[in-house]
Image 1 (cartoon, rainbow, N blue to C red):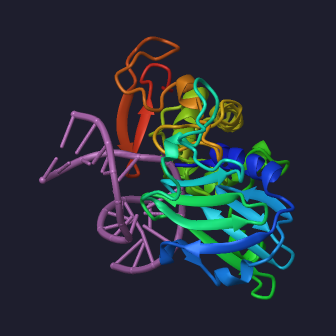
Image 2: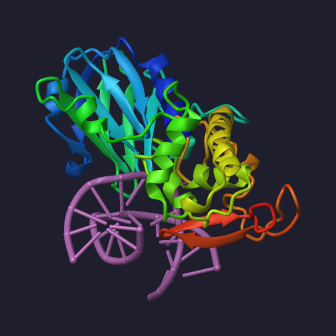
Length: 291
DNA sequence: TGCCCCCTGCAG
DNA sequence: CTGCAGGGGGCA
């Protein structure tokens, strides 16, 4: 589900809502969803919430909890004053937790009870996601885990030069597949890779080696623009994604190609094509995305 | 660099 | 029933 924009939206929400609270208890409903000793979290105070690539980072004084939502993960925040989400649901536009049903639900894997009686649910239908608890002593925190990852595309370290250098390590790879490589740029997933190629006017099948300098420039700008738009519209809610209070994202309404197979291109009117690249569905406009 | 796999559920 | 889904680790 989540790519950089969706994880960023969750991060922003959690930063405003759980920092300063303590962990009251953790319940593991699926063993493989939590790596590490969850009991260590008891009574620990949350001091920071961050993001690196598609990974959420929740910081404690001597511990860090990493969360990767993979394809179907959700973080749901249930405020303490809401006893029964179904009876207290709003009508019309307000975010509600209704989309999650009763909580915990069938796909809830971990429950984190917080000191003010609010609750975090880690839901993950496909069980690909994980929570990992790291400690300072293990030396895993920070560089070792994230060491090989490329730059944050919305951060200061992401220059055109760095982008070109990293991308060109994948010379024979189709450009859209190379954009998915987290060592090239961190945080791009299938939706934003497709959108980036469209914004750059580049055929997603084109090998990195064959890209002109102008195309590299436009890809660089396209990455930043598509990701910023993703955040601006609250993320992509194809199936699973909603922010922690149940608000869905609207980005796919504004997407140019992703999910628009056989629909007219918003730029030229010709029909959007769907192909498979690197095993992933890939959408593009054969008129707008050519040499 | 390209599969297969980890899973569950939904659409065709 | 088959195939597909916002990810990515491991293996040849």
